Each structure stands twice: as structure tokens, then as C-alpha cells.
Length: 287
Length: 287
Image (cartoon, rainbow over all chains, first blue to last red; front, side):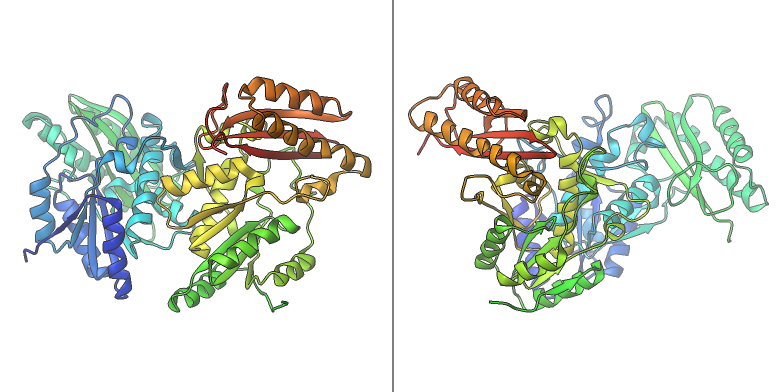
């Protein structure tokens, strides 16, 4: 199915589009993205389509979620390709704002989800989740979605957004959707593009290590440090992989676990060449 | 006019009341308060009534806007009296939530309006406006008002809320309303109750000093420090008045002015006995 996708750049235009939908009593499903879409994003859009009448996506490379030495400037962009891909999964509207409209002169307001934002990726990216929470709140206020779909690949982001929505009494329902992987297991990410061919091969160690952890866990291992050490060893065994963190944490509050006696997530971040890759898997003792 | 005021304590109940109003296409005007209502509050409610179909007020002594050594515990409360007063000005509904419902276990999300929150009252009350912005955002998300009315007495709060609403793309329209004063000039405040009879008399120096500043200004004085010094001298002349700050700042961005060549506000905070009192007046060179 290829349909004409409406592209809206200005906030007022978006509000007017939204009020038309609301006036008809229809629902909106939002998928916020930074563009350079891949199958992972498309799966979120299909999910949004199942759950709502009109799928809106945003494409905005949000400057406030990048640190001073991060990849804001080189973050990959290809709007025409994104347009075709979005169209192919039935997206009705792309909100594609300009940075100066989202953060005009004098902009001063930031949303901080304490605790959850300073662990895992928050250690090496201290202002990242503040930027994410802020822009997502803005998108929610502009697009007024009934549901919004986020990938579990960015697991910490998902937890933080759920917390923000609950804490600030936002009306949107947050839906998480499983990681989509390449055939060889690498979690899909726009940043995979930074990998050389050789690095791309090495990068499969992340999903292989997580698979190893799952095997240990579902064979009865409940000691977090035993599983963690096996993972670290496997990743360190691959030349050129620099671990940022490998952690086993409570799936809801992200607190570190010694014993995996409740739903947990193994989350990791590894630098390979110019790419900082993240991946995770959920360990559920009730399964 | 005395009408039955609906009192709603739970968030779900409030949402259901709000959706009934929205379904009829009617508008809501919100006046957030901490209760212990006085004529200043009532003037805001009357204004909300002029501008909307249904006036909702909130009464919530918000713990996150009090510092550790401030007056949270002794803040005056009189719900029955508030109910009568609200009824007398046509308020239709009072949202009166419990603290544990507004800040449940695990609560972690705070909104910070940078810069504006760290000057004036923000110097001696560093977390105050973070608490204000956060609770106001929550109230907006729960009550979904079309307009919300705030007093100019809390001038810095008004500027911060306007900034937050613009920055986060909230749909509510913020309306400011002038200070209401006692016959002798003292700005109305629930905290005036902390004053002894003698302190109550001394406290009139604040409005007298501001009047003096207005006179200087409208007689042509544009040098901020000349006006400021006259005010400080007058207030210091009153025994037992301890100045927290007296500042002349830009009326929009609260930056300190040397020369009053644009709309400005003289804002002050003075401790008298157990009360920390604030007051302000606007100086407009275009008048």
C-alpha cells in the first residue's frame, strides 16, 4: 500500500491537522523518530496502525539529546527515503519540524526524570534523557496522540517515558514494541551505518552475548554477576569492542540486581569504531 | 450567588468530570491555589468565570514547592471556609487531591524552567519554582483547562508558567491578573496570617515603598539603582523588616536592569517575623 503522506513542518499546521482528526472523534497513534528509518521503526508504525485510526510519525534529530561531543552533526539523514518507507506502512502524516521552531530563542524548559536518567546510558550521556523527555513531552502536546509506540531497543528511554507520562498525568498510552534484528542478530539502528564492514561483523557479538546470557538464565542461572561476567568476557574477546556498560537491572525501576528474582533486563552499550551501539534483552523468571 | 460546588479528590474522578465538559464543547477555566482563599484568589476566579464556561479551582498545598525549612506544615488551611468563598464567586468544581495521589511512591519527574527560576525568589528558594512548574503542569494535564488565571502578586511564578507553557507547547492560555491589596496597601496573601498585629502595621512599608518607587519612576527617574536604594532605605527604616531582595528587572525575562528603558518590574521579598512577604509593581516607560 503506497499512500500520499502529508508532511507538516510547522507547529500551527500540525495543531490544525490534529484538531481535524479530534473533531471526527478519531484516534492518533504517534511514533517519534529521528529519521533514517529502518525496519525497526516500520514495525512501530505498523503497531501504531493496528492501535489507532491515524498514524503520525515525527522526524526530528533532536539536538538536546546529544552531548557536546556526540554525533548530532553526522547523524544520518535521508528524508526522501523516509517518506517512501513511511508511506509503505500506511503513515498518514510526518511531522518534520525545524529545530528553531522546537527550541526558539529564549527556550528554557526541561523535563528531568530523576534516578532513571542517571544510570546505564545516563552515566556517559548525562543530559541525554533530559533532552529525550523534553522533546517527547513537546511532541505529545503538539500531536495529542492517544497512543505512542516506542521500541524496546531503547529500553531505558521507554522506561523513562512511561515514568514521565505517569508522573505528569499525561493522557497518552505508551506502547513498547520488541527489538527488530538483522538476520545475523544485530539490533537494527540508524547508527549501524557508522560501522565499517569489518566492524559490522564484530558487532554481532552483542546479540550473541545476549543470547548466551539468555541461555544461562533459562538454564537456571540467577546470579547476575555470573551472567554479566560471561557477557563481558565474550565482548572483550572481540577486538575493538569497548564496553561502556553491561548491567543487569530491574525491568521497571532499573535498579541493579544481584539475584535475578524478578523481571530484569540485561542492557549494554559498546563502542565499536565510531558507533556507540546499545542492545538489551529481557529476562523473565516467570517464563 | 451561592451554588453547590462539586468537590473531587481523585484524579480519575476529575478526568471524568472534565471529559463530560469537553464532550459538550464547553470551556474550562482553572485557578490553581493552595487554599486559605482571600479576595486575591476570588478575583482570579471571577476572571476565570468571565473567560470560560466552567470554573475549576484546585486546592493543594504542594509539598514540592516548599524548601526543607519552610512553612509547609504550618501553611494555613480552612477547607470549609474555602468552599463557601469559592461558591460565592461561582466556582463549579474544586479539585482537592491528596498528596500521595499527586506524588505517588516512585515519583521522579520534575520540570525546570532554567534561568528564570534561579533569580529573585529562586536565590533563597532554589527548588521552589521547580515544584511550582511541575505541579502546575500536572494540574493542566488533569484538568485540561482552556485558560488558567494566575495572580501578578506571584509575578515570577507567572513569568515561569508562561515560559513553560510556551516552551512545552501546552494548549492552555495563561491569564495574569493584578494584585489585590488590603485597604492600607498590603498585598493580600495567605501568609499575612503569620503577622502579629504590630508586624501587620510594619508590613505596609512594602506597598508604601513600591508606591514611592512608582512616584519616582513616573516623575522621570530611570536609574534603577536610585529607585532601588530609595526603596531599600525606606524598608530598612522599619524595625524588624529583613530584606531578602529588592530588584528591578525586565518584565519578561527577569534580567536585572540598570536603566529602566523598557517594561520592568520592581520585585521584593522581605521577612517580617515569621512571614516571608513578597510584593511587586510594574514600571512601564510607555505609560
